[in-house]
Length: 326
Ligand code: MEV
Image (tube, rainbow, N blue to C red):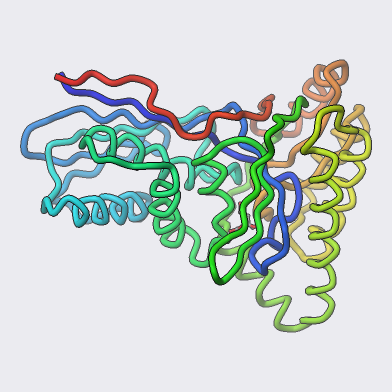
């Protein structure tokens, strides 16, 4: 039975979310929590099933909104190989993390589906091609994405990302920093599109103020990049920079009392730094911790969070995990 399993990592933005949408540098790392896609051959049908969303779609039904980005990808690939409609596949998606939580799940989903499909259909590809297709899916999910999420999900590792009209400037660190992140989920539903729009409205009211805040966020990203992209990184200083970045995210209106509680509990229990990660207005916070403090932070924060995950930077990006050819 012909079958392919591919996966892509989730990410956390360590520095510069929101500012990155306006062309300032951001730093993100892939983490060792993945989204997987399994495709197996079936005859004359196309079925997509998400275990986590508990949604199933068959070709003859109208497309549920959760699968619009994936259907865009399928359309692009079917154009590429001139095979319409593209049938004969059962596509199943399953994840290490809850959906829509601010850890780049939509991008990691798109990247894992694309990698699995290209491999299943035996189409020649490289990671730049995967990244380009995933960006198209991200536009459907989020409207005006910076492209950082799909880039990290595709290439993995620690990335400095600057959005440019002429195409992004992407630097990938040769060094994978060694630290532990505690990820605590507020459990509040969130939408990147909604948060990005709110920030855009605030910027329309106070363009000079908000652009100055973005500019400082960019400087924080650059300070952190210098420290993070070489061995012997100074985690205490990096934690400090995370705290400053969190204050600025609060200033642009993407904090909530529930997120602030999680950040404070992490800091009180020994985190070197803690902040919102991703779009904010719900979803996760991240806390940076030395190994000795992880257990204490985890025990304290779990009483206030829907879910607490421990993660480390991941260097692999998207991969084919298994393939049966017949
Ligand atoms: C998304 O993970 C983070 C934002 O900066 C939006 C984007 O970069 O597209 C809020």
